[in-house]
Image (tube, rainbow, N blue to C red; front, side, top):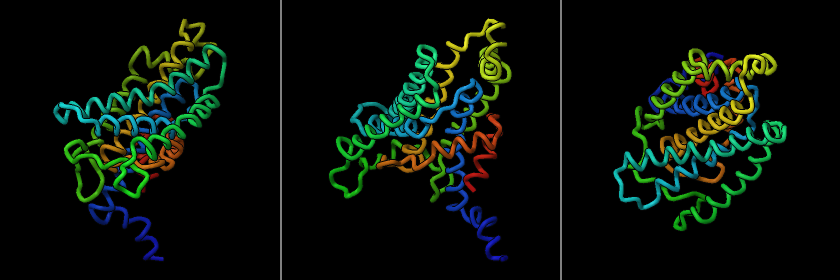
Length: 265
């Protein structure tokens, strides 16, 4: 029994390798869960997170592997923007479909995912595949085009700071900004929001796009920070697990961090 408790409670923190990998998993879960929180707080349920992570990671990989005559930090920044946009587009489409035709975002995001995922599989196993490897994966990213490691030899990287900044910014946005108040009002009571002059038709697409962008960011961090390679089905359930983390956190941005650490542990 003592050995079992040690393996469960102590082992994940017993070395830089274990602790770093546990925290790296928590970083990825936190970023993806923040995307879920934004959708939840606006009154929508996003089931397309897995595909948005996939799209963000693939877009980032395409930029990082392209022969761009630019300094590494600029290429990384362009890859980050590409990942954000690739995750935001399907999210925005779900929001627009809701406002224009009344389609439930939960259904539309899931259906869009069933389109995005096979396209991603085809890209990785076809045009982007490393022909010199037996893996269904892209070539490995150059070391200079990856986020710096914080606790080698683990996969924990500087994406930790990106996650902390994102969580703090979303907390401030939801609590102290006028736009955040409108988002929360539209999500909690659409009738009250309408009487207050708040249009959910404009808020929903924006919040779903922002949530999708955060999923795209998780894809970027996974490829450029944790793995250094884009392989087939690399999200591996991250988008689905992020929903559980957001629910454990009660859809509170800062509470997502301890919830993700617990889930990663």
